[in-house]
Amino acid sequence: MREHELIVIGGGSAGLAAAIGAYENGLKDILIIEREGELGGILLQCIHNGFGLHAFGEELAGPTYAERWIYKLVGTSIQVKLDTSVISITKDHTVSYSNKEEGYVKAKGKAIVLAMGCRERPRGAIAIPGYRPAGVLTAGTAQEYVNIKGYNIGKKVFILGSGDIGLIMARRLTLEGAKVVGVAEIMPYSNGLPRNVKQCLDDYDIPLYLSHTITFIDGHDRISSVTISKVDENLKLIPNTEKTFEVDTLLLSVGLIPENDLSEIAGIELSSATKGAIVSNELETSVPGIFSCGNVLHVHDLVDYVSKEGENAGKSAADFVLGRTNSETELIDVTCSNDFGYILPSKIKLSGDSPVEFMYRIKKPMRDVTIGIYSGDTLIRKITKKTLIPSIMEKVSIQKSKLGSNDIIIKLIKEEII
Amino acid sequence: MKIEMPCIVCPNSCNLEVEYEEVNGEKKIVEVSGNLCDRGITYATDEITHPMRMITTTIKITGSHIARLPVILSSEIPKEMIFDVVAEIKKVKVTTPVKAGDVLLENILGTGANLLSSRSLY
Image 1 (cartoon, rainbow over the protein chains, first blue to last red):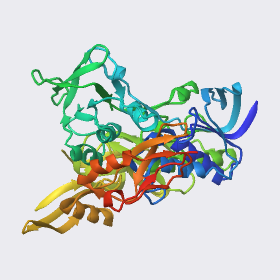
Image 2: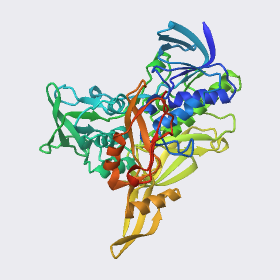
Image 3: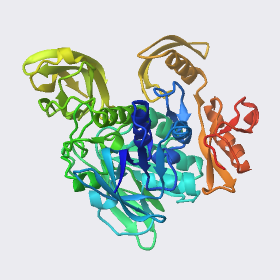
Image 4: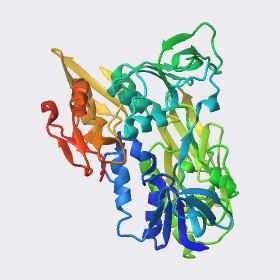
């Protein structure tokens, strides 16, 4: 069986950065396996700008950002296999993949980095009542159809869910000549970044119906209308609040799920909060030598953070392969109170002196918040924030010497719920 | 007058507090706070007096494995010109090879903004 120092699964923003990170930290024999015909992942269809502010100090369009990273491979010994699907990964690091040229192949990685990204929640996941006509698609699929394939997907569009891709597509379709008649969001607040609500909806007078959801899809060959209803604070439908919109297209922007089928095959422990792997501060999963980064670990809102995490995973993989890792088994646990969606990393190795970067998300929008990070019962860091919203991931870095040896928990000290 | 507005300049999405006064129908900024960088001040000033926007879209490309070339402007344009500028961009058609950053159209409708390719296609 062929053996590589490192196999990276996925050639999007996380995988590219992981390969570069590993290369810069001493690995030479690195293989990236990518399912699509070119590198870059989802960035290639994200033609809007705003990428690269942290990584390059510039604001770039998605494809430009991807290209910058792809060019970093030039002159390195990093190998790439395109149009190649990974079928399984085992605990002992055997990767089975297949492609047209080689057929079915097994290869071994001394280390493996998982960088498979995430996928969209489809209609089936949210069970909208009504018919099953054509013209109902996820926002990301619509993005690919419009921005890469150049299809005209519809003239009168409704969007369910206020995630960033849905908001970006509302503007995109408006510029392509379609009429976006509205966006419905079941929560009382938007799930997208405030700047996207402003520049993608407000700028084009597209109404955002908060606390509303779709209760009926009508249409036989093609979708002909959607009906929305208001929901109360328990997300229960309020009768007689129905509104019907005649449309020929419905986009769903109802969440992203890390794509961890391969991680499950490898027996990697997953978190129910992030739907990604449970990782240490070195981004190592429960299987030694297998690391996870990017949207397959947890869904990010900024690609720059994905790249950073990818580089860190690559560095950790290099440390593992080159025997620079302390094989200490005593890890402390990191948890969060119920007010938080999640906190990462889930576990911390206390050896070494590099600071630990915690990433967390709040569950509901809050104002004038004080957050405490505790080591056991001892408060080790107090953070005050004017506003906290679920769509923005927060980060805080703490020196290892301050962490103590007790388990870490993040809690609210004071808050005002908006 | 004091208003709150999300800054749209970059993904930091700062929540700006903008204080301005209106003298003879002309709006003047008194103070901007909540911004992490100076671009927030420029944005708030523009937004109150003459809103500017960046545009990204796609144009037809032949000779490539994909149907559309993503494009971006070299600088922002007045918000009210968005649809005119997009219509002008749509007229541009290109053939491979194209490099990221190539200028495809200069000074669109006198805005001073150039049309740039967002990726390389060979």
